[in-house]
Structure formats: C-alpha cells, structure tokens
Length: 232
Image 1 (cartoon, rainbow, N blue to C red):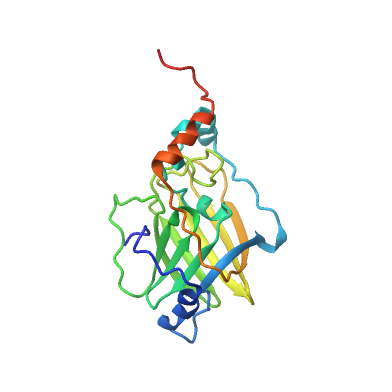
Image 2 (tube, helix red, strand yellow):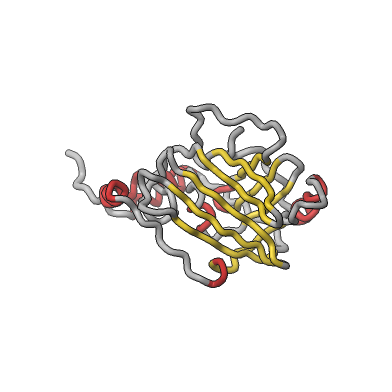
C-alpha cells in the first residue's frame, strides 16, 4: 500500500494526543502528538550528503526553473523532514500517520504483521512506500519505491534520489522530546549512507495549513537566473 497523501487527519492537538488509544497499549511507545523543531540530534550538526560523480554532474547541470517545488510538488523525505516545519503523529493499531505542515503532506506507515499488501513492482511515488515496526521504545520505518526526484536528500541541493533510494527512520521519545535517527542509501547517487537526525519538542497549537497554490508558486521561478542562454 502506498505512502501517500490521504484524507486529512483532524488538526486539533487532542486528536494526536488521544490517538494512541487506537493502538495496542502495553508495548507501544507513545509518539502521538504535535511536534516542533528543536535542533539536530544530540546537538550535533548534520553532515551533508556526499554525491557520486554521476549525481554531482546532475547537480551542476540542473536548472532551478525545473524545480518541482514551483508546482507544489513536495520534497520527498528526508528533505521534507529537514525543512523547518512542524508535524503531527497519529498512532493506530495497524498504521502510523504523519502529517506535515510542509506542503500538507500526509504519510501512512503500514505496520508489519497486519496483512497489508506490498506495493506493485512499478508503483513508485513521491514519498515512497513505508512499512514500520516497533522495536522496544522505537518506531522503525523503512521506505522504498521512491520516484526519481532532483531533491532526493535536501530541499536546497540537487542531489537526486533514484528509484533505488531507501530510507530507514528510527523515532523514539525522551520525556517531551521526540528524536529521529535516520539513514538514507542510494547506490546511484550517494557515495556513502547519509545519516541524519533531529529533535522536536511538544507543540500545543494546531498545524498551520500550507495551501500551496501552483500558479503563485511557479511565479517565483522567474527570479532565479537560468544557467543556460535563452532559446532562439
């Protein structure tokens, strides 16, 4: 099943805080809630992704006007996560739903052991397909089947993510702090696994709708000078 934009989850904080009751109670860590950016994991700055020669060549050739963001196409994870917007987690018995302020994206993580079918061989999507499991106090998410995207690992760099990209996220909670440790791999565009982590604190206000308008968004592309001469 797809990790995708689905029906919008109610935004009021109590929806997230009470959603844990829909999940098995005893061994499941309580991650539901609204979360606000605090800083990098354990206060250590995140390293930059290291591109292969192939990906570095793509970065040099890519022209900003081709950026899908100008048409309200969301940056895929991990770039979606490393942009400074908040998000909410809702835990259910067979799935976890993560709703982001950025681009109003909603991810569905299908929990293992509940009979969810695997994606089709050619079913690639913007945010990929995610399956998750609980390991002790951590939620472990593995995502594959990403569609190709020039913003594969960052909202601001043109290191593309290929259809071979894979991302593993590990979330856990320490008091009122939610932590993420993740690793992204792509044999076509990364020289080495890209490790990435953040921390968030509890947020009490509702998420703000992003409401991206494609026409307004595309208008901004005109302010970026092209790398290439105009066609005649």
